[in-house]
Image (tube, rainbow over all chains, first blue to last red; front, side, top):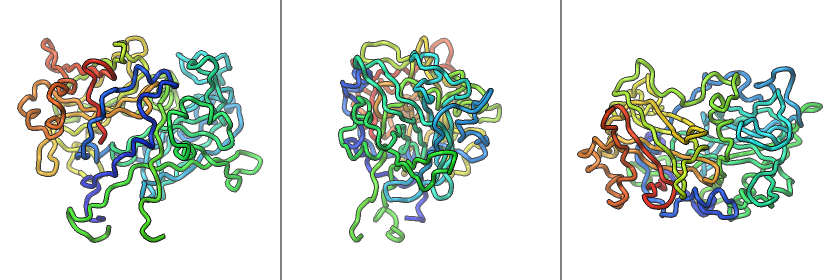
Length: 245
Length: 203
């Protein structure tokens, strides 16, 4: 398999029962935005087996430091944390060169966005976005502040648990993924209509970052580990050659 | 462990939410100075080969209202049908193949300036010129994948192996319409739900 160019290898079918379905009426925004026809299933073509290539050269030195990358008069306010993890595929292969983008609310639960109406204050030194590209072993890391929980218009009194949004590219567009990371021990995870769009509790557990005291920076920042898994490439057992499967 | 199948499962998707622009198009969201230009904002330069085209349209929800907080991404081949990937060094070095735009916060209109892709060779067959379109927004739990084909490519479209799998009455939802007055301009509306719902793929 190693001798077959990656852009000729197909992917394991996506397990749609593991992901949230499109129509989840307890998350009200999904009602009018969910396709009602069945998705048309197709084997991947060259289009989906390829994807944009992003090099480390595109990154600035503060792209993965949300405490400093929007700092104007001082550093961002809040609990300093480091979020890191490994990006793997379903076979456990480290995914080097994966562009990981992340965005979040500030420590008070307020997003820097003109359509955001929560009363919590903006932090003049916090923008809320960052990005990184995984290293040879598939690892990424960034420094930020722990985001706050916030209320949102859905039910009369729904609150989002503290979370960070993630966008991942992988090497093929078939692997494209956007998700959210939650924090270990937060009871609000299990009360959230967006979290509960996912049916399987063990799938939800996969979105919960673990507090990693071992990698905490003494007198500075707590560490959370959040590993992510992208779709794996199917072995082409008999299509070309057997070796190396 | 013997006979062990895949050790991991794909990370489950969650909605991109209403503030996806903060992370994916921060300059568009007026978060300036973190990085100079939003990823995918410019698909072509003066050096890019091929016919310049504009693609624009709306994403509509099930009530027919334009979605004003969508993020749309394009992935396409260059003018010769090659993808600018690590595996194909013959692709146009002046073309990234990747575009990303937010729909307008007031009107919902989205717009891309790109080039018309060539036909893509795939396992001995030729695909018609096409663009992969990926849509995320608040209320969309997992990104939606569709394809854009061109109304002036009827012969190639008739041979396309993917279009051939789409039930004929729904194929029209994948055809971008060339503007009669301005042949550089194509319109591609995406309907998330309801009559004329766009065909979305599980690929």
